[in-house]
Length: 233
Image (cartoon, rainbow, N blue to C red):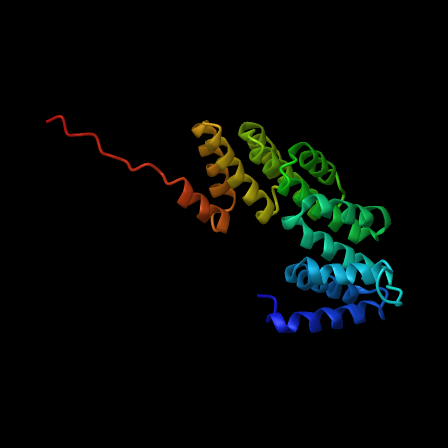
C-alpha cells in the first residue's frame, strides 16, 4: 500500500502544492513521480480532479508545467485498466505538450494502454520506436516491450528472437539481459522449441548465475533427472 486510504488526498495535495511552487529541479522529478503513483493508485476520480485543475477546467489556479504533466500522466495511468480508449487521448496530450521526461513516461504508458486494449500492432510499433532511444533505460524497456507484446499476440517464436536480440544488446545489464534470456526461454517453450529454450536458459545461468532471473529459470526449467545405465552383468 502506498498509504492508508485516508492519507492519500492529503499526500496528493501536498505534492501538488510543491509542484506548483517549484518549477524545476531534481526534487521536483521525485515529487512528480510520487504524486503520479499516489493519485493513479487512488483511482480515476481523484486523478480526474487534478486533471481538471491542471487544464483550467476546475479552479482558478494556473498549474506549472511540471504539475500539469504530473496530473495528466496520473489521470492517464488511472484510466488504463478501466478504459484504455479514454487513457490514450490524455496521454497523447503529454506527448504533444509535455516536457521531455514526461513525454517518455507518456510513451511508456501508451504502450501499456495498447497492451491492455490488446492492440498488438500499435503496441509493437510504439515499443520499436522506444527501443531506438539513446537513453539506455528507455531503449531497454522498449526492446522488452516488443518481445512481451509479440508473445501476448500469439507469436512466441518471433518474441523469442526479439528477446534474444535484447539480451545481446544489453548484455552488461543484469536486470534487462537476465529478464530477456528468461522471457525468451519461455517464448521458445511456448513455440514448442525446447532445445532453443534450453540454450537461452544456459546463457542466463552462465552469465548471471546468482540472479533472481536464474533462480526463476531453475524453477521453470528443471534439469531432467539422470538415470544410470543398468549394469549389464
